[in-house]
Length: 305
Image (cartoon, rainbow, N blue to C red):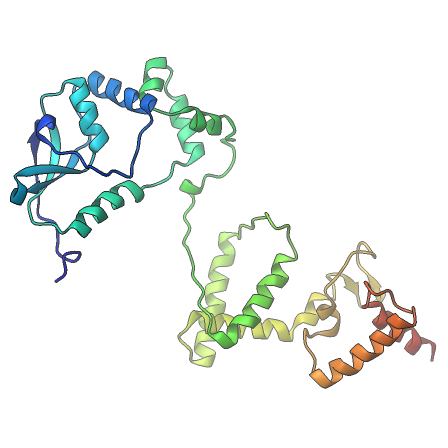
């Protein structure tokens, strides 16, 4: 078992903060006004309300504060005779000491602005508001919060990671790129919960039908089915098959693949089309920035025959 895998041997107790050894190198810093606020709170409470993490370094006959250095200094400044501590009673490598220190500094939650504002506004006493320790930056954030909006902290959500094989990656990127064209770059979509179960059902069907266990592969199968039915995004969406006229704004842009029913074509056929379009552009029949008009010319020619 490595040092990182060995469980910590902990005990709890009280200790005189003046007998503790503070870290010589501490990545966590605290502004003077923040430290002064901490000292004032500790003095008001007459105690530390959270324990400091102390390593009992018996080899060097010292007790090192791995986490809670500023609280220890505030306790000394406030004149506390003792503070609560969690003692680590075992030998620690230098690496584990540093890892413990960094983890206590780095792994922390984030305040949900809407909840934070609601709690802060419950404090009708100026002293308690000062005690809360919120700084100007956070207070400015609270001033901009609309409590009518949704709060991420109150949503039940999960993070989903999709992993693609190299051969699947290009197709996946193309599909996502097409999806991003539908919205502004900074837009966010929220799917209804009622769509969650059908999505899982679709993945389950793809899993069972193709006898695959990989979620990304199942999603690839679903996308393949979608690609084969691109033309279904035409009728009743932007095109009326009865009147053969566009639905809604006649000048809005629509995906060409919904008209042709495919995003791709064989290279030899694509080369023939490209040469024809290039000629139309050179002859001035089609604008260079609107090469799609070559299809319009072809269709008009067919209709006049």
